[in-house]
Length: 93
Image (cartoon, rainbow, N blue to C red; front, top):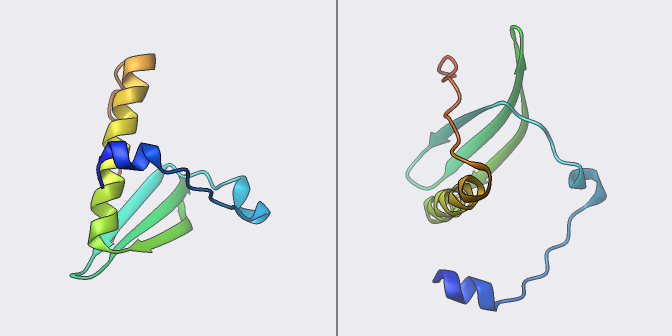
């Protein structure tokens, strides 16, 4: 589906109140197999690390998410200036 096709569709999405406030994360870990990508969103402070949300999706949706993030980061940087990458934390396994 092209970007133009996505813009033409008016898709309504509902969100449960318990999820509407979201979860804050300052780290993420990504794992994958042939059929799934697992994205763990983590809040870390001091020596403690906790997964606050886990999203499991298929490789096609993971690629679509990557493209959507790239598009939105470009829009953000056009409006607010270039983002400097955060320092990389220790690898989580």
